[in-house]
Length: 180
Length: 180
DNA sequence: GAAAAAAGTCAACATGGCTGACATAAATCC
DNA sequence: GGATTTATGTCAGCCATGTTGACTTTTTTC
Image (tube, rainbow over the protein chains, first blue to last red):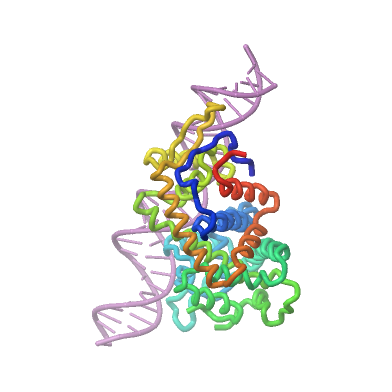
């Protein structure tokens, strides 16, 4: 990234900040780091998506379908917090191109349960691999303990009322049940 | 509900993980936590933006203009990594509505140097306040030391070749608004 | 004086959000 | 058994924000 224009000295009114007390200012660097970190993080899958004619929306959908095979459309809407129509467009493309399979539920035949096809699993695996590589590298640079610390920090950044749901979602995939 | 995908299901790493070396698979939870954390994080300013008829693009532009008063359009393009045309649209609205001021450079009159107006500073301050509040709360929940740890982790998540630039960007603004 | 740089603009298009209205099948309630 | 609710899908259109490509103007630099 290039240097910011160094030629001008702006006069700012509040430049007489008092460096002693913990200023709200002191967290701006974390705000910006989160911006840049996330930008690179979600940029990783782009190279894989582009040749397929897919975008980031496809990534998100396929990721969660793959993580929670058999999830309902409603579950997905709840996780992604987008409208049925927005999801429908992306989901249809994933089904048409053979990355996701949609079958009627056995107990409730109104439901369409979503499953990744082998092709879909492979693609989802690529996304996980490339993003895991970035995280893994970052954790190694930070030394031991950061895996847990980062997890706690990120969880604490989530709206308190959503944390239980997110936790269930993560745990759930590791136990093999459907989100409720 | 049975697990239909035994091929992906072994991605239940935690069951037989040895804690020594982080395997790629074990990082899926961090991938998802980052997704949810960032979603809530960037969702904060939305309530402020909506009544103004602005979107997240306006937020990003105003933030960096406010942090680096007198920056050139080129600098902003470099930070945001969007096209001149995309930026132009958003920037014009911010200027028209009196949040950003654009003046010709003194030493190089081709340049348009960007400054936040008092109104722009106030709005940018609101964004910083609400996002700082979330981070601050998260850090408190995590205990001491997390501020530095989170900073190191996030920096390590950035593409190595960009880190120096990001660091310069952050330092530059925090070191008083004087050119070096 | 020519070339390069900084910025702006026009036109067209893609992605992925959104609202509103409506359709269908299946489950559930009374 | 009929009414209602639920889960899903779909059409139509709009909006925000990204893209490419071509071109202009002003100013600086070589």
